[in-house]
Length: 327
Image (spheres, helix red, strand yellow):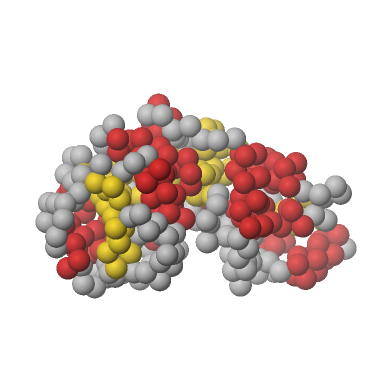
């Protein structure tokens, strides 16, 4: 199959390309060449910024286009114009952030966000979901009923440059007393990027269309289970979790940027309550959480990345734990 992957050198896109080549597909990557430029020499590469000149897509045709880097409806529209019906079926990697305050256990037909101003292009925590929803609408308009929309929750695993799940794995691997932000029963769902990629390729090969949540598990597990699983898999002897009240942390300026995946004050927390039944029925088979934890840790050892500046530092963590104990 001739496959065009738009943005295939980082995280989800990289896993999709890696597995697609492994399956024998003829892959072309459209990317800027700023990250992973030396990857996949066996694939064709078109270097272009999708926000600018897409004339490099003026020749050639593909059976399917997989878009992992569409954040603005204009980008999806411009891609459709550049391909001029030569891109085959369209697969859009979206997000569960597209929903407008969905109920627990929501399915793919829950109400989507609407942008207050359709000309908005600034991507923020407040606009991200609405922009992705607008991208989906353009995808259906321009690429038709054969479009496959994939809505993952938190994507985790090797190549994670966002360092959310990975930050927790590596924090637990250092051991000692760990500040665990409450409430411990807060729901969380994840999807290993490799499982997301494998299932997406399966759907492409079967020529499936529709909208699907890719999330694990069903129902969500509590944040406590996530951190305790990390302690079991990578925590050295003596590792402990100290659960700290969310209001205590919030009063001291600690937020979900400091402690990723923490949903106490996160308006997107409802995204952790998605029902993945449709994707599971269509063959999604998430690996055990324990495997993702171990393999993420192994990858982080081989390819270490500095934590984002907003993450809680060891010194700040120790100070907060001391203050919590002495309150």
